Image 1 (cartoon, rainbow, N blue to C red):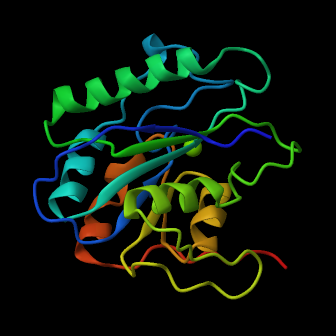
Image 2 (cartoon, protein in one colour):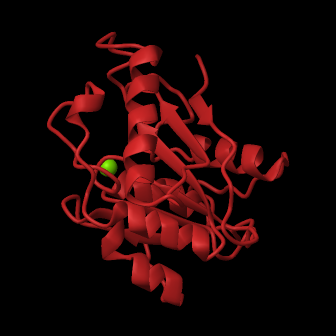
Length: 205
Ligand SMILES: [Mg+2]
């Protein structure tokens, strides 16, 4: 089983890192999702205010980790070079709107449901891996079906449009923010920055 695909670029911070990571789902949080998949850069449509919201997160001291399930890859619909093109275009589109809207790392799970990987959300593998890379530490805060674990940083947060996103964020103890897939990140940015707690998500036992 291959690991998640990691796309990391060195990104400047406008302020000192506060030690926390904002984990963001991609489709329905940054860009409009689509029945099936986003299959090419041309299909990317950014949601209103998402570049400004990423910039606001960075100005509040967060580093950004995008975590996205893209099973089109394991289904053989397209490969890693196409994924790279899509994500390089996504980065350019964001920076064209706001020069501080950098994405530190984009983790992609290429697997399908039932393949037994540990990265496909709601599994928290991509979040754990991104945390270890950005923090340069092997430490992980992880609990699957027990009580919600202590996060590595109390400000760590997950934004997504699905329960599977909330499950992955819950498993690393992150603050949870669920958004409407047509509104995305800008819907919750004020609550994140002002420190209002996100939605609580309780896994079904
Ligand atoms: Mg989504």
